[in-house]
Length: 290
Image (cartoon, rainbow, N blue to C red; front, side):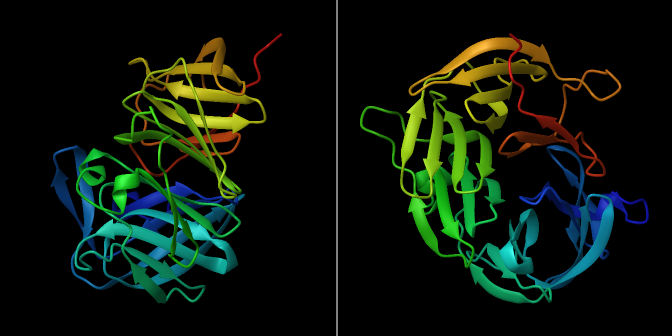
């Protein structure tokens, strides 16, 4: 993140489907204590205007987002210069907003509660994944994994095959053009859900992975088995994820990276950051040696 921006006022950050880093900065925010760790920024009032900082390969630009009525926790870029944000606050049940290229709000809609992930691809598909508090109480979140179009219209919700446990909480999500990969509690199968309606489940050797990078028949699963810095290099078959090798996650300088925020999986890339939103790192899907 460029140093002229105050990282303490970043409401949300991600890496989008075009490999650009996004930071949503609220200049008029105050830090409030959080039971989950560091103090978090909160807008002083609603609605408010925020500044979206976009870094695409070292070229930085600013995009104002106006009339936000949410305390934003998730955001992503949509095709045609639009953006989607999700959060909670003054907007009530309409906890997601779409903003146009001019930064003005185009639509507000209900995305369900307890959103764990919000990710979009380059083909006008938006995926939301949920944790248990929403799955068991909210009719939208109940599917656990939902697909929307880029206008905010509900298009699909996950239904497990007969004999397979329903989603309780999605632990890891990867989104590429036309497909989402998810791993969920309690049994941690790997779900491959395509926008043409095809859904496939595979058995996996990893319990509770934190991130996924998928490239062809290769998948890298991060964490799991209470080892957050473990990388599981695996191969996909029709029905299973087969372990091939293991490795350790380190920073570019070789130092171990065991604590990180929720990873962002984009096809063959897995993006990670530490506690600060200022810097992201990228890990490519690894092909096992030999």
